[in-house]
Image 1 (cartoon, chains in turn brown, purple):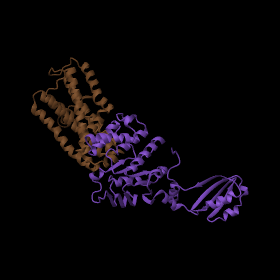
Image 2 (image 1 turned 45 degrees about the horizontal axis):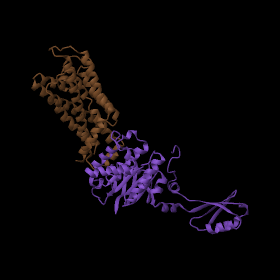
Image 3 (image 1 turned 90 degrees about the horizontal axis):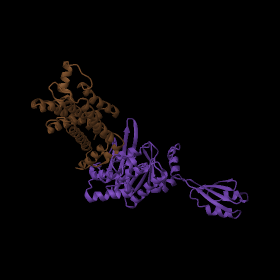
Image 4 (image 1 turned 180 degrees about the vertical axis):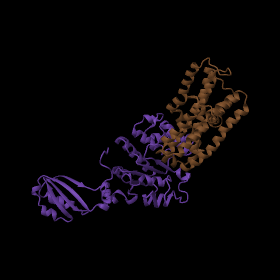
Length: 243
Length: 315
């Protein structure tokens, strides 16, 4: 129960990280705004405004980097000088690490909701079922946090863990063809259909919007199962590093 | 009552022995000054005593608990002031204390009062709602101490709490430690500043190369190396004084004259100062007396053959 009392303060710490706020909230808002003007009037093959699709993708892309905050806090609290103080405290240290991860996920989802609200009410983006969209954003944030923590627990040099987390985020953005078009061969099709969290999440949201609920659930369940499996990996690795 | 003890504790990092069969017992109300140069093993001793790191051999007891000394129940009675500043920079001073008070199970009014008291204790009440980012090094150190005091621990471990701060803040911290001592708190205070230990410790433990090489009160430790006493006497005319008579005084080992200053080296505790002064006064006027007494630095130097601190770049 004592760990719960710390969550409010962990959340305060996260909210006061202004650089993170700038990167995960202000930058996406600026990009959404710019692209909304650039893509104004442009439609997809189905006649839908292209900006709808772009807004969803943008919000999802930034969720891929949401794990960086929990990663940094776990590193600071458990792998720097502060660990001496944390280990001297009369609470379950593993649970405290878990609480940091939970705060990171909640914070990431909240930022996602702010971006959703902004894109829907300012640029008229259509998110469809909001609860479903929030669930997908949650899955992406969960996965991002788990992956980032796996990197933190796997390597001794935190800088390398940070770079790996960036590779995870940027790598899947590239694979999704968001920076430049990717070849339409079997490998890329397979990756973007069953592996890439961004395309899985985007397809889950589009699928639900287009009444392909089965397809949407299938995509979201891949994210959920991946999170479950990786959570166990994270737990095993974390147990070795956090007593 | 015994608060903490270590018996035959051995800690190794690879082939390097950091704690070498350490025995230490801390009674309630004691202020133990743990003195040693950098790398002596002081921080490792603390980490072992708080259960932060495992050890290869020996036994640690906290509050009489041998079976589970590092249980949360025992941790609740300990306050740890870390050597590094380990406060949360993104939280205000008050929030920092609220965080730790909550972890120690304080709630409601009790939590509010203890946070306020801790802030007052370290003189940061007027900065309660300010971010530590804007604090001076000394203020951060004080907040670092307050974080370990919110739950009013019975046993406080302070790991070099005055490193790298200004003299005013150091005095403030030392005064705070004295206040805690008056309240009956047991404190383990590690430092390599001899004068701090002399000012606050009821017992001094000297460590070097992972071993406790000597312990006792400051006076006891000094006595162990005090074989001679050195007295310098400034006189009006040293030429008038019969040095052979001075040399024949019981206990006097050596008499040297430097201008109008006479330096006399006697055996320790020989009690011959009265006799020496009467002899001098019979032939010349006495202008001043200066007795050179050994201090903890000398004790350390004698025991280890090293200086307690590096002289270069100090303060």
